[in-house]
Length: 150
Image (cartoon, rainbow, N blue to C red):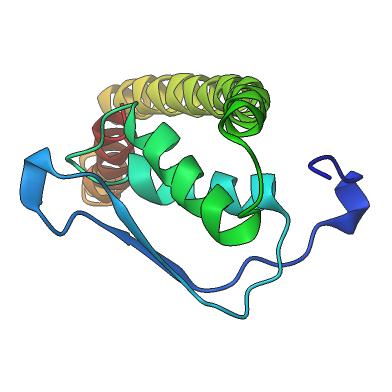
């Protein structure tokens, strides 16, 4: 059975995703053998790790899902795998919309805050100039970090 209610999620175990053959090889999942977790929740975690890799390509998700499915549901047919993967992809697309919305909101908030600090700096007396660059630096670092995730 693939679908479980949200309250039936178990915590995900420690796992690692790596590319042992460099840029052109498929991702490899090292899963803890005693892991008993919900397939989609575990795949969400794997997808997050894969997306953080600089060598990530979208097709890696299907390879990783197949590896995970074989480890968790070894008797599932190829058609069943494809069906389960499409269901997970729909779920993942929804999650990515939520992530992108939060990212956009935070980015716009930081840009607005930066504009306000520049305006405050223009109107501030010289003795306050030392405090404002540190604030601008913190905002700039967070903006740079957000832009790296794109």
